[in-house]
Image (cartoon, rainbow, N blue to C red; front, top):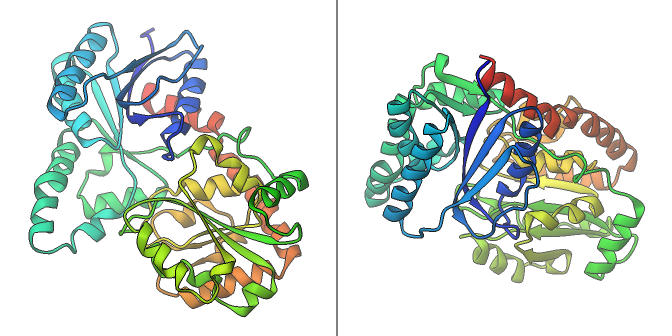
Length: 384
């Protein structure tokens, strides 16, 4: 029987990172526990994860410039493939994917490239120099990858159809894999979790917290709902606070809108929080919102679900694929911000309804547990 060996190229890693790469280590440990030798290659390595699993080796790249890093990665992949690692999984990084495709051809290997998001819809609307730059530095790379990669990986189900339609990828090349959630880390909040978060933030113990966690990128257009979602007397009467966690290009725009809002006392901006610490905010909150204009597989939604939070979100990307029947009533048109705010206030005023959605979410999110998703990876990559 052929040995199961996997190279996993991670775009970046830091134990203080606000990005979701922090999740990946736990998934790879679960995959290794099932008999797969995993070589983790970290392109932008700010710290080396401590992984005691003997089936996992971690290679942190040392070079910092684009060209030198590419040459370094070339040698790493060459050595690993000569050592029997013939399957390469690349998450997001187009440069790494292109290099892996070229090297894998020589060694008769396979490259799996993962991406999930409807950014193509946004990028194609760019004009002038911005569009030329995108075509040369973004779309051209994606075009090469979709043509020559062994498997183009995405999730959830809606995103398969999105890429077939918008990137013209052959259906036979598409592969469905889910994002995972560590249910042991993200779990149902307790009364003590609620108390500790309010104490930390200096909020009344009987206050309600509406939580938002994401990166402020222009394509997401979060500034349309923040702080709008908190700007109503009903929100104030519900003794609610909007807790905003995130950073990014639109951060200053959002800060300015909060500063000039008549409800700024109801909005708390915390900036970036490391992903390794984010669960305490989910566990102490009451409702989660994701008012995004663009998504693929929104991991923040399954994080919230795993912590027992009802979610109010926009119907973009694959959001509706990852939720149950009751929760789907709170996934709304991305342009209807008034109804979005009304739905948040509806949940704030109805504890019984929140409990029902909470129960559904806690059960439904098990589908995306790290244990289940790790088996999905092995089935799709090694048992095809």
